[in-house]
Length: 300
Image 1 (spheres, one colour):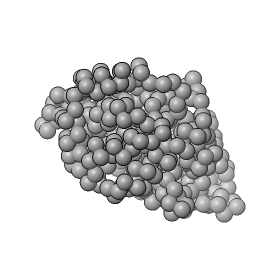
Image 2: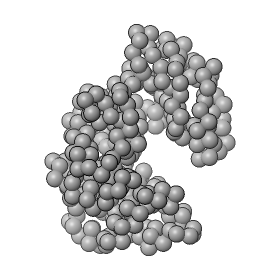
Image 3: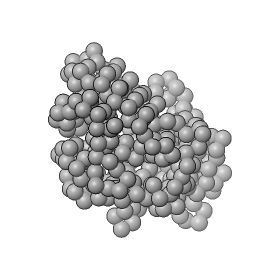
C-alpha cells in the first residue's frame, strides 16, 4: 500500500476537517483501484495539496505519468477537460486517461518539472505572457457548465472579508468594499468567450522541456485573461514590485494595462494574508497607492 505523505494529510485535515478525513480514509483504496484499472506502476505521492492527491507513476508502456484524484468530482471533470484542450498547444500536460464519473484522470509527467518560481527578472514576465498566448491559441470555448470567474473571485473576497475582525488586516477592512465593486465593473466590461486558468499562481506553473512553462491545477472559468496575469503578478515573494510586473506584462497582445492593474487590486485585497509576509508586503505597497474609483474610470 502506497504511503500518504504527512504534509498532504495535515493540509487536508486542517482545511477540510471531517469531510477531508473521510476522503483521506478512502484514498489508498482508490489509488490501488486506478492503478489496477489503468495498469500503472506506482512510485510516490506528491507531498502538498489540499484539493487533490497526485501520484507519480509509470504506465504499462513505461511513460512517466501522474494520477490525479481530486477531492471534488466536478472540479476534476472541469480540470481534465481544460487540460486536454490546452495540451494541444503545449500549454499543459497531456491528459492520457479519464474517468469522468469520479473526476479522476491520468496526465503526462512534466520534466524537469520544478515550479516556475519567479526570481525578480523581466524574463519571468515574458515567459508568463508566452504561456498565456499558448492558453489562448488552444481556442477552447467555455462550456455552459464552466463557472464564471466572478463567482470564484467573490468567494476569495469573502474569505478575505472574514479576516476583518483580526489584528493586522486594516488593509482588507478599508478596501474590501471597493474591491467588490471594482470586480463587478471588471466583469460587466469583460469580453465574453475566454476560458481562463482561474488560479495561475507560480505554484501552478511547471518548467517543461527547453524551459517552457506549462500550466497545471487550473480552476477553469469563463473570464478575463488579465485576471490570470494578475494572479501571477500578485502572488510572488521574489522581491519584485506588483507595479513593476504590471508594466512588464502590459505590452502583451492579450493584456490591457488598465484591466491588469484593476485585477491586481482586486486580487491583492483578496489574497492579503499575514502568514505570507513577503507577498503581503508587496500587496501593502501596491493597493494603498491606488483608488478603486480611478481604476474603475480607466475601464470605461
